[in-house]
Image 1 (cartoon, one colour):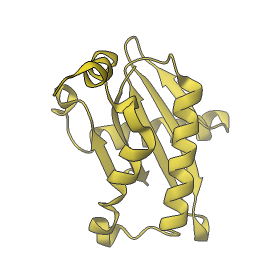
Image 2 (cartoon, helix red, strand yellow):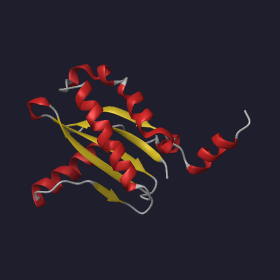
Image 3 (cartoon, one colour):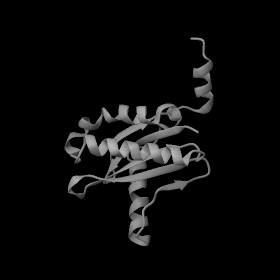
Image 4 (tube, one colour):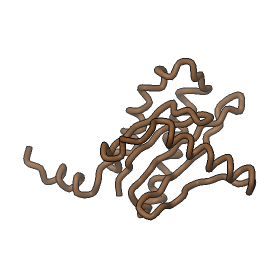
Length: 144
């Protein structure tokens, strides 16, 4: 299992986005946040429920909604190549949400550069989950 992409979305705007698998970096930058916003809005408007994850044939997308001051909401997401470790991914996403809320009590989309350093927080929180299993093994047994 590996995390392909992760980030933070505010009202359909990607304020933090980290891609770990370059093979999947060819899509439009607003496509993922737009999809996530549409799915969450659909779930809430039609079913009065929240989406925690959704699974495709090869990928699972995990979502966590965090409420900031002034009732602003951001969505933390992770796109993974399988769902074998869903509990671990959910725990990591909740941890990222807590860190985001602590560091940024509100969102100002006029200053998106202010959120750039949060990419490092996401990456360090996920740790080696950003690597494919074969890459993890290679790093353990590498002699370099």
